[in-house]
Length: 290
Ligand SMILES: NC(=O)c1ccc[n+]([C@@H]2O[C@H](COP(=O)([O-])OP(=O)(O)OC[C@H]3O[C@@H](n4cnc5c(N)ncnc54)[C@H](O)[C@@H]3O)[C@@H](O)[C@H]2O)c1
Picture (tube, protein in one colour):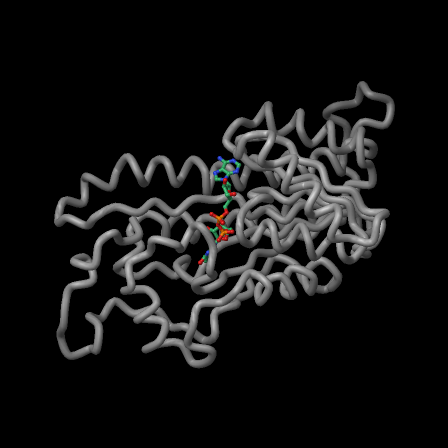
């Protein structure tokens, strides 16, 4: 997909990876619509910064949208089509990682599990669905009436969706709720890729290790220690700018579809105690990642 002149929605667009993505896309000549839940003043200010970082032609607009609210996402995507036009896809970065002190009581995790499923999993399905429907709309309903007409197929590339899973999608002991949710994101990516292929819309995901952002600011040192011990190279947390080239690669490479790309320095997550020879139980290093 050609980036210059296209429009992309960036969910979590004021966050660490989303913000860096928005700047990269505007720098390459695409307009962006940032979907996030921060107050409008904060989002509008950030969108102005993003727009100013480009060459002048590309626009950046903020929409306060909760991605778990299907109607709100549908309406916001429709506004993006009306105001910016030429919608070609989404880089879906909105997500949460809940932290709390560990206990031995697994049942205490149930509310957090439900919340993360809602935002990280159902939210991913909602965003993918409304972006795809908006891209397909002019072709699915040519006369505005034939809502359930025959499916159509095309060889034209018409859209691209980039989701965010995680190295934790291959769950290990210390990501009890977040990990399984990210496994589901990879499942949604593959299922959407299959379903949307005939419409010329590709769907891939990225699985980073630890990226420096608000999400990781209060992580237990367990994770960065594990990265030092079990990554191949580099053995340090990544910056968001080390993740965005893979987003560009997916958008521009028509042959990539239905895959998850690890961006993780070869981190192989294990559930061993630090040092493999004992030491503190990671759950003592609160706050942990739920
Ligand atoms: N940072 C990491 O180490 C890391 C590692 C692997 C995967 N990821 C994934 O990458 C993505 C981006 O993470 P990040 O590091 O930029 O995090 P971040 O916290 O900096 O940004 C996430 C953004 O999502 C927004 N958001 C949260 N709930 C929302 C909702 N219901 N509706 C709309 N927006 C919402 C937040 O306001 C925030 O701006 C997430 O899906 C995350 O799970 C991050």
